[in-house]
Amino acid sequence: MVSFIPFVVSIFLMTFAHPSLSNTGCPKCGTMRVPYPLSTNENCGNPKYKLHCNTTTGLEFISAEQVYYTITSIDSKARRLVLRPPLIDQGTCQSSDLRVGGFRLEDDSPFNISSRNTVLLLNCSEKILLSPLDCSSSSICRRFEEKERVCAGLLCCSFLKDASMTNHRIRVRVEGCSAYTSLVNLTPGALIDSWKFGIELQWVQPS
Ligand SMILES: *[C@@H]1O[C@H](CO)[C@@H](O)[C@H](O)[C@H]1NC(C)=O
Ligand SMILES: *[C@@H]1O[C@H](CO)[C@@H](O)[C@H](O)[C@H]1NC(C)=O
Ligand SMILES: *[C@@H]1O[C@H](CO)[C@@H](O)[C@H](O)[C@H]1NC(C)=O
Image 1 (spheres, rainbow, N blue to C red):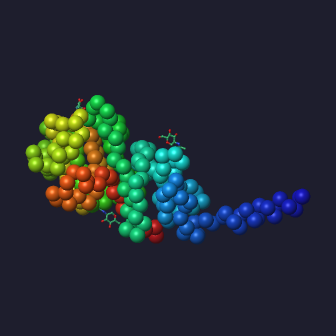
Image 2: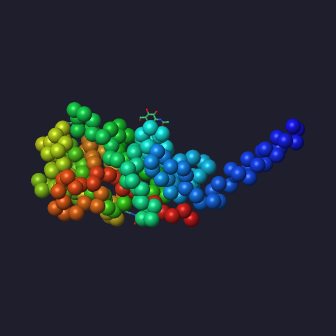
Image 3: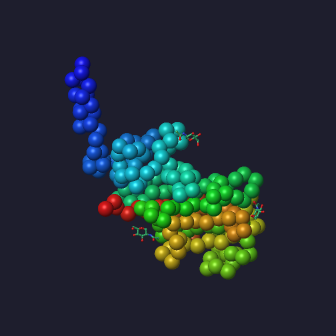
């Protein structure tokens, strides 16, 4: 018995130690594959690419503010994943992550907000007009407002999250715009029913 325990321990170490050397993906989370380097626990993937697997609601991304966003799709070849935008609270035009200022990534995160996102800012104050956003009556956000009635008739603005802006944050605040959503890969003139709602992130390959 005395010699049996070290034997078991060494078998355990041979089986489970050095998982990071294997560059393997993590087990599926619900029905979703979790390709390398994405990581749902310390035994698989790369710890810098930490996600959360909630066994009932699915795979989730954790923002710098510790808000959990559901992941709706992953394209490991293109190194992209799409998050479901936060809900707009019933009865007010406020994003559910307004209290933490919206979506933010850590400065040293291997993820960034891709340049294929068109961000719609809703219920904006007049002050925001000073910045380079499309707040005109032809802005795409007006068409969203028609659908999301609670924000209708309020000032809104849209912009493409391209390389000229920070790719680590979508900011909302009470004195600016109190809600937002995002559309991935929007083509001009696309019908509202074909809009793909999501916040698309891209990741760098681990070195
Ligand atoms: C999964 O998500 C639900 C709904 O948000 C939450 O109530 C629950 O605590 C989560 N469970 C885990 C293990 O994170
Ligand atoms: C719009 O934002 C203002 C300022 O944050 C807030 O007082 C107001 O309730 C918001 N409107 C709606 C419909 O939520
Ligand atoms: C995000 O990161 C990728 C990979 O490093 C890079 O190619 C891309 O230009 C970045 N996107 C933005 C909007 O900065």
